[in-house]
Length: 232
Ligand SMILES: *Cc1c(COP(=O)(O)O)cnc(C)c1O
Image (cartoon, rainbow, N blue to C red; front, top):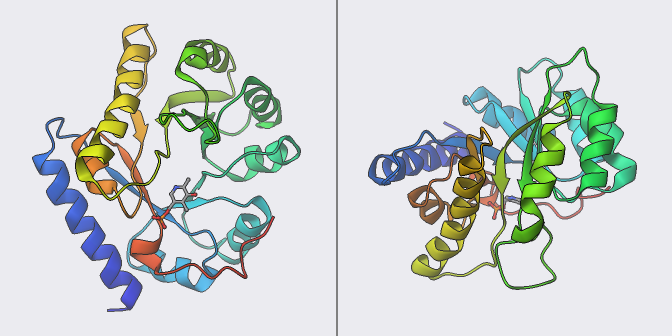
């Protein structure tokens, strides 16, 4: 077995274990975050059974998509979105986790071809106090969700967040609970949502305990990132 196949299997086992113990007992999708990793490494993970990959940089992702055209991969865009990249994102991905303003949603909706299935969208929320973090504030969430739901080429699936990093398991859980509560509030306002995209290599076990349905994991699968590849 390759190093990546081994790591993938270990992460999958941890996810299964955590989801069986989680109070919500939800299904959890492993999204392999492959930014700054070579197409060869993605192929290795794919051959070990990984089907969902997350990328942060549009040009880098498209280059890898071309090299992996023969693979049946579902591509997720998870990085900050510049408005001049919305057309490429709408054409080259099935999911976008990082929508945080109306202008971006609108541009994605207009660029998404009607021949394709609707683009799956998560709204990125700012769940920590730090004002520098990206993501919509809770107060503006319902307006953005309402707007997104009106676009037939978009399908609003849920929320994504990147809380401030901490090693403290209880603090990790407390931050994720805020995100889950925001999802529940939307559901109670009538939105039909099924996705909570929370948890990375350092905090996915806490995220699963608090109801994550997608965990986004990079370094725990692929090892350290190759900084030279990252670009946009
Ligand atoms: C890089 C990245 C991840 C994965 O981070 P790791 O710590 O390597 O697991 C997850 N989500 C987003 C939005 C990222 O940019």
